[in-house]
Amino acid sequence: MVRQELVARQLDEQIAARFAVGRRLRVLDVGMGQGTQALRLARAGHRITGLEQDPKMVSVAREAVSAEPEGIRERVQIVEGDGRDTGVHFLPGSFDVVLCHGVLMYVEEPDPLLAGLARMLAPGGLLSLLVRNADALAMRPGLAGDWATALSAFDTATYTNRLGLEVRADRLERLTATLAGIGAPLHTWYGVRVFTDIAQDGTAPPVDAETLLAAEERAGRTDPYRGVAALLHLCGVRG
Image 1 (cartoon, helix red, strand yellow):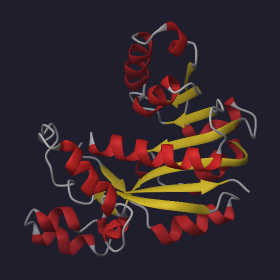
Image 2: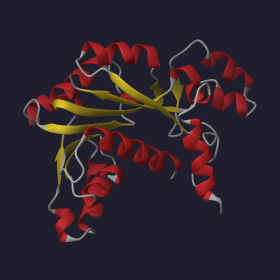
Image 3: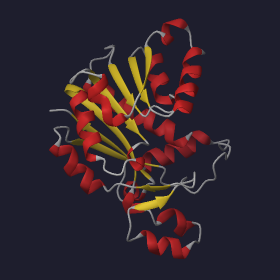
């Protein structure tokens, strides 16, 4: 809940800053998963294309779309495919906004993927990335009292996620250079889950969830707190 809500607020802020009020945007969601952000933007009137390679997630997303009113359903298209093959499915410059949330950690070499995403953007388009923060990998095990894992996390950019998979994280400095090199330089970045990263999956939101979100949102915009967030939300703009 915290991740999705914070990213939604941050994304809405960037869209409002870059596009005219009421403009219907063309949005590509690469690795759309269950479609949380895609459906939210479709409800706001935007036209969404979701690209997803996991058949199970495709099924979940299609079921979620089918539960929406007809006017929203007709604004969402789901394409089965790999995010690294956007050039196979779409023409360059076809989208105003490209989302890639929670995908880069599963890609061994992210630069070709990112270059392909940037090519999908029209001039002035917004690229929204949500990545695991490699500069904060020691925080979760350290706060949990797992000192050996915390010590080893300082010298690596890989980690074991909550699904038990060995995956990779990204550093802000390197991604900033990559975005500049592919023509979508970093415009703004946020931290996501500064205080709540150690909460167990399935934990019910507290009664004062809005206060929790306000604290997380403030921390995600404020140094030095945002630098130790579990996730980084980077927003690049196509030149």
